[in-house]
Length: 420
Figure 1 (cartoon, rainbow, N blue to C red):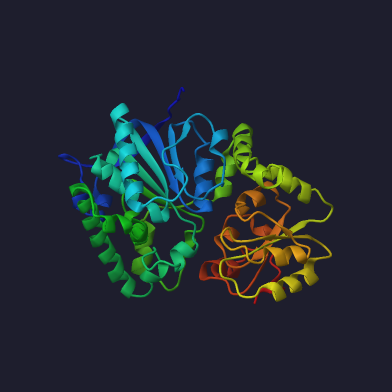
Figure 2 (cartoon, rainbow, N blue to C red):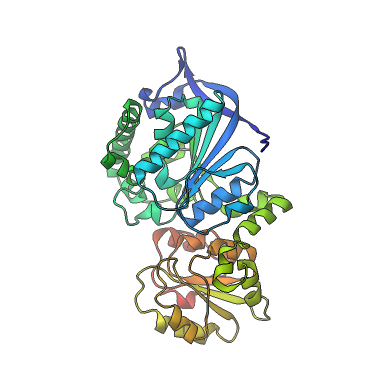
């Protein structure tokens, strides 16, 4: 295998005595001069959810740097069709936090052992942000040898969610938020110092996925950035004090949508991406067709397609579905896309004439591949990753982030009749 490595300019912080360590404190980085370093770049991609996995699979096709990937959402795409510069460093199934941390540390060790001057750029889902910090600090890499891109999305992971320690924007509301911010800086500095001291206990490893509450303060570091689809939500939120808005402005938040990455691909790499996703052979086991052929058979019709999306633990949705059939059944081909782990309504949907899509189908890819398709459903980050004109309705209440965009006219094709 031959790799052509693209050089990247890495900006880092230096002091009179060399590269500054972590102990200087996050607030001090912005006041230091910079050093520019040219180095070979290796990419490490880590994700669990569908959207972050799609971000990573798109980005790894934008160049041919050596790339190492782990993702946990099975069947999102087929690695066998990816270019030779992409390799898997951890199998696609659930692991303990300790195992992931140690495998990531070992990967960094292997990269540096083969190329002592290599720079490592991590692309990680936001709640996995501690793994690269642990890996580089256990290997003693200075700050100019690594860069971290945390992939968010302005969804449930930032606005509440199911974990008490998610990076919730609510934590920074009001004047209490300023105290929380300062405490997070202190706690994060202490955590990084602990990483450099040695291995952790199993309980400490298990907290890795929950300590993503430090995401925004990590954004103060010069070698850490946060990809968000709508960073303006944090800057324009009227529940945040001027001081906290200033803090957010100092973080390295980058507006980056997955469609931006898709549009950056040349025709050849775009075809590789869709072959790896819509051509995934996993669907052959289910129905004898590739996913692309399966979808084409249903989308090649005279009427446009309307897809209704579900969520986990829904109340009785069937009366709402009957209402949707009455409103849209004559003008659209109706489809049902269940949540990947909640398919209890599939039979009832089929009995009502809806085409039931595979539960593991990455919906973002479907909507990217078929721009004339429409969708509606329960609150989901899915609605942030598709073309705004494709969203026709919401079922039930929508969260603050979707409401924020709705109030600013983002969803230009929305049918308000189903807003309940």
